[in-house]
Length: 356
Image 1 (cartoon, rainbow, N blue to C red):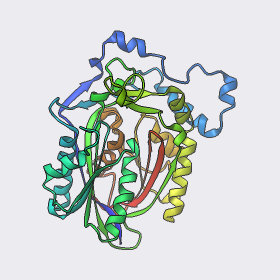
Image 2 (image 1 turned 90 degrees about the horizontal axis):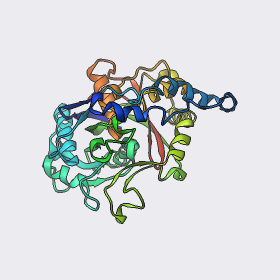
Image 3 (image 1 turned 45 degrees about the horizontal axis):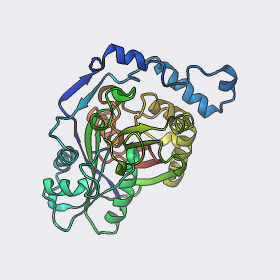
Image 4 (image 1 turned 135 degrees about the vertical axis):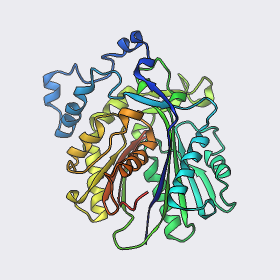
C-alpha cells in the first residue's frame, strides 16, 4: 500500500492580464537588465556542461522582457488566499468522489497567506466543512511545497491515521509583486489542490522522494519590506538577491540532475522508464533544459507558463491536471517531478499516475 493522487482541483481567476498592461516605456527600461548576454568567450569557456546547458537554454529569451509569458490570471480584490485554495479543494474532492468528512488533514502553502500566526488551512477547513478531528496547518516551502506536503501526508495515510489528505497551494503574484519590477509580468494568480489517498498494488503511487537543501541560499527570494524583516514596517513585496539567484540559476541543470538521478535510484526505476516530467516552471526554459540535461528528454511535459505565468507551488499540480485533461498523462504512466523553492530546497517525486 502506498499513497497516490486521487484528485486534483484548480482555481484560475477569470480576469486575464495581457502583456500590454505594462507601459511600453516601462518595458523598454527592463530590456537587458537580467541575463548572461554580456559574458566574455573566456568566461563561457570556463563553464561546466551543466552551466553551459543553462546558458544555451536562456539565450533565446534574453531579448524578451516577458520571458515567454503571454498572459496570466489576476484575482479579484475581494478573493483571499484561502478562498482560492478552498475552491480548488472542492473541485479535487468532486473529481475524486470523496466527501469532506473523509478528509483527515489539510496542509496549505501560499505565497501570500492572509495572516501570520493563523494558518490559511484553518479558513480552508471551515469553508470546506471538514470534520473537527481533521488536522489543519500551513507549511512554508515556496515553489517546492508539493514534495514537502506529500512526504508529511504520506506518513499519516500509510500509518492509518487519516484516509485522505488535502494538499493546497496558492500563488498571488498580483498582491506581492510591484508593477514597476522587471519580474512583475512573470507571475500570476491561481490555486491548486491535490487529494491523496491509499493506492493498492506493487509499484503504485509514490515510489520515492529525494530532496537537497542549501541553507546558504536563504534570502535569495523573500517577501518583505525594502529593508529588514517584516517586523520592521513597510509593505511586504517580493525581493530578490541577484547574486544568489544568478548562482542558483547557473547551477540549476547540475543540481537538478543530481536530484532526479537520486530520486530514480530510490524508486528503483531507470530514466528511460519516465513517461511524464512535471517541472516547476519558474522560467520558460527550465522544463526543457532540466529534462534534457537530466537524461529524460524523451518524457512528455506540459507548458503552463505561457498562459498562466509562474504560479510557484501551483505549477506542478496545474501541469499534471492539464496534461491529464489533454490526454498526455494516462493511468500507469511513471511521473517524475522537479521543483526548487527559495531558501532553498530542490526535490523530485517519482510516482505512478492514478488519474485525477
